[in-house]
Length: 243
Image 1 (cartoon, helix red, strand yellow):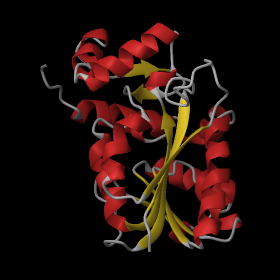
Image 2: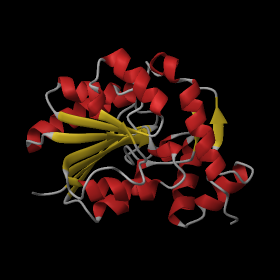
Image 3: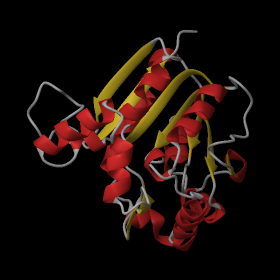
């Protein structure tokens, strides 16, 4: 399968967010799946008695604001400065709590944070594995992925086909063909996005974690005991590591 140049794609996505920074929150008011996920993040943090947490790709900082208001030592990293500037004003977030940074090279030391969360970020990056590797590097106890699940989208037969293609190592070629060799899609609502599922990162996190929990964050759309793999379009994966 031919490789595509991600440079232009990344530049496009950042330009998209910079141009929509002033109306970003209004465009994403109905991101109920991430609000659901934050409730589970809060509960897990309290159960494990964790304090410090990084919101990777924090956008305008709504997640950081929630975590700060919940009493945590919360920080955010976002590559688009316009989103940070807009968010700090809108949500009254101290500027020192958020900084411009790249998910593939986080400005934090090894195991310097109790936890790390991403809310709808990984389906916007060309190589999610690199970002998850960074989350693993900087985190001691818990990693939260709240993101898309391609296997829970579309008709039931197409969901089964996606799982089979992924397990056989064929999904990359199929995705490349269906996107005309770009491997990404463009939309007015979400800018540039890639085909992604939190299950793509399951094995990677399972090597680091002592416990994995997967929860649906949207309504069930298919009655099957393959739940939530084939039943939820968005999923929260919680990876916990013993102290």
